[in-house]
Amino acid sequence: MVKASFWLTPLALALASVAASPANAQVNLLANGTLTTSKAGYYADLSGLNYNLENGVPANLLGGLGSGLAWASNNTFLALPDRGPNAVSYDSLIDDTVSYVPRFHTVHMTLVPNTGSGLPFTLTPTLQRTTLLCSPTPLVYGSGDGLEVGPGVPVINTAARRYFSGRSDNYSAAHNSGFAGDARLDSESIRISNDRSKVYVSDEYGPYVYEFDAATGARLRSFELPDHLYVANPKPVGDDETADNTSGRTANKGMEGLAITPDGKTLVGIMQAALIQDKAEGGDAANLLRIEMIDIASGVTLHESAYLLTTGSGVSEIVALNDHEFLVDERDGKGLGDGSTAKVKQIFKIDLANAVDVINLDGTDAAANAVSKTLFLDIVQVLNANGITSDQIPAKLEGVALGADVNASGVKTHTLWVANDNDFLQDYSGTNTNPNQFFVFGFTDNDLGGSEYIPQQFGSL
Image (tube, rainbow, N blue to C red; front, side):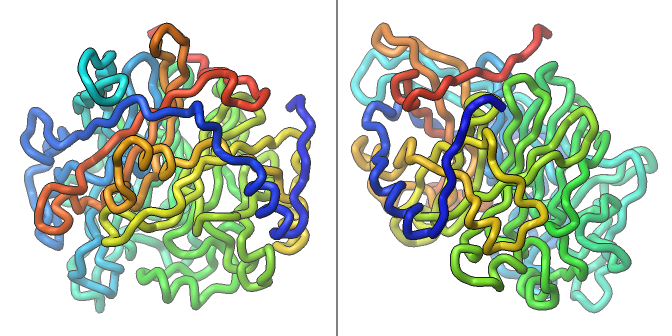
């Protein structure tokens, strides 16, 4: 950590500061592509699962790819769905969740210059592989008793591979929500190690941060997070869970974003919304998000920083520019898939150098020590300028990754990739109008306001 940072105090000052820092007009849209098919068929992934879930949805449905997005070197990315297709009501006693096995998809992105009209590049994503996430040790699954469903054990479980699941009742009532033996997993962000042998996944149920074998999907270990992130009394219904706890993460708003520093030594996770205890304080604390810095070697949390929401209703992702500066995706939930028009999809730049450690501070004091933020990219503004109307901008632009540089009109250009979580509702409004989408933005060093971009340092295979 080498640079100094400034601190926000009242939220009003934060709003004024952000308003005075418009997005740089040089950040441009380079390409837009969709992923709707694979070798297995239309909207079918490569998991090989050939059965239906409790709500009748195919277990291999290719959807929700943009909950998390990680660059894995060259033209390869990892796309992460969340806990599965639960946007259609079927059993409110478990928040309509199903025994969807969490997974990540390996996607090859063919990005080539466009020789015709339209955007500068064309993008063709190709699904190469689907990896299911499992545990070599036993997990706790729900019995389904009193919940109008059967047991939550995935039908593909074996003695050696117990699969994680999106079912909200797959937890132990004898532990807090941070118990690593719980089978429930609502995966939200993914990063890959520099040697590409491991992936790191953050989640909303715990929140958890897990390390998995990149080749097999088997969990290797769980990282230690502060106790104040956990709820003491897990519940299968999110609203009940939040109401029945006085501290911990808000239900369905856990560790939404995860970054890895370029040297591959540190993970940085960010919560989607204020903790229950912080929100209860009101004022600036109600807009406080906590950021956890995790040492990969030791597995422990080293530092907690504070971030204040200023325009969006939550944060979906964080990605590293270097070892101390990060881009944060702050957004609303409006747009395509919500039946409304997108308003807030913004990416801010923050600096954690010399950030105050707020791990022992209450919400009010932590908010007074929040890191500064400057607007780097207004996604709605740029997409509108390229003919994409606000009602066609996906409501959940969640996955964010920095990718390989390209040559754009003779200029070395960095790429910023943004993906949508379509909630597995590609047929929203009865037609295929809400596909898995990827947007590629281009920027140069001049757009970083003096910051240095250092790509993740991948080793040779």
